[in-house]
Length: 363
Image 1 (tube, one colour):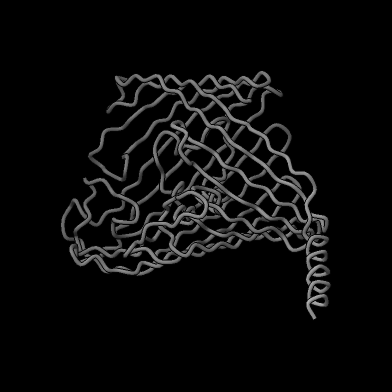
Image 2: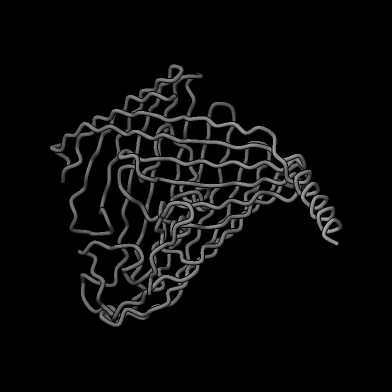
């Protein structure tokens, strides 16, 4: 009997090895260094602020392939102080799509939130925008499924589905546990992209459970919903793009509590944020490109009762950005100028003008 058991176990082990054995994997390191000169970060348009900065990102990437064609890969990116910035593990099957486990960044939201063409950075690099926060609560310890790309009447269609058991935008090392949150429950996301020749469309939505009302402020709280859609079209050296975003934090303030003369914080201010971005980018040649982007984000109190002249009106934050980039192999020189009006949807806030010049090296 013992011999029979040994024979059976040996055969089973051999079968599992044959099914899941992997070819030799590979490991690589890549990264970038940016030295920046920024001025104008102070209030007003006097360009009183001055700063020199350095940005260093290092990514470790490894992976391999199983005998059945399934591939696996991992990427870990560190920030300036060598702390964890993002870590993802991806398993890609030959015909059933891919599955990704990640923390820090890497959810589907990053492919939909500010998808307009730029020569250098998204406008949120200078001023954090609502658009850049769409679905970012899915970034912590999530699982995401990406479907195989389907070809339908000449169009390529790809879908994304994601889930996070506690969507609090915390990040911990692989195998770690996110700290318990009494207010944030599970998060779910879904997105779809459609590409046809030079045109690309994307549609995305994410929902997060708000589990505990904020009794201290008297706010009524429901589940949060974020949404975005975009369209990009490229013809020759020119690319144009348009995007709309929507954020309902699930918070309802008391009537008249939100004033046009106060700063608004996403997800804690009552009301709804809506935004739109438009841009055009032009590749002058293989090395140089320029772009212009405009962004408008409006805060709506959802308060129809006019209680005073400083409440119940919509307030729009506007950003205009001009960017240029020039690359020579692994070195690049990039710059932008961004003008911000009504920062944080505050009518009383001073307008700002910020210019950044960056010298970058990639390895």
